Length: 195
Image 1 (cartoon, rainbow, N blue to C red):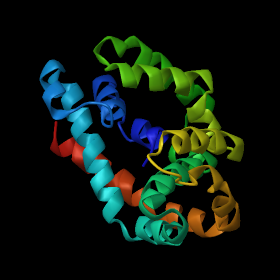
Image 2: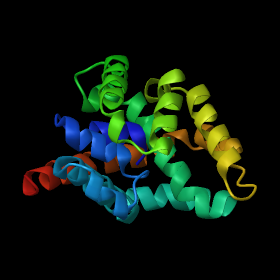
Image 3: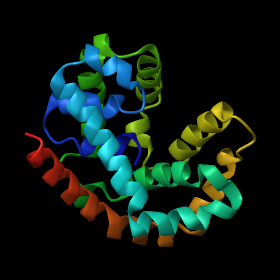
């Protein structure tokens, strides 16, 4: 899953949310510098990624993209699933998406003293383009894909993937809607088990 999902799946705990955001930015050696609750959020991030990668519905979405995007197919599926989370937001949250996005930027900015430089730069990108909210439209997804394509180690063609999103939108949405309630349940149990 991508950033919108990770933030939503953290529940109400601020430090858990911060750690879940930092999951892709901190190395194990840096964990010693973080509070135990933030470390738990990093662990939740990795648990979400492992659960997602193994889920049958997610794998179906990945396989649809693999012929064209090879190793980037799971990355694209993560991003597409944030698009469908934003599109179906009211199914999973009572809080309006724009309000949630602004709350997350404020929470992350408040805690950025513990962020590595890459996490700060990425937060600036998220906020300046209101990415969390704009995951819900194809222009927002295109901006994210353009940025990722530029950072890829070879010509990934990720910037062209919106074509697949449009072509198979109904299939991806069906798979997402079958998958995400399972992930929500998994995270609720994981958080309870680690209190």
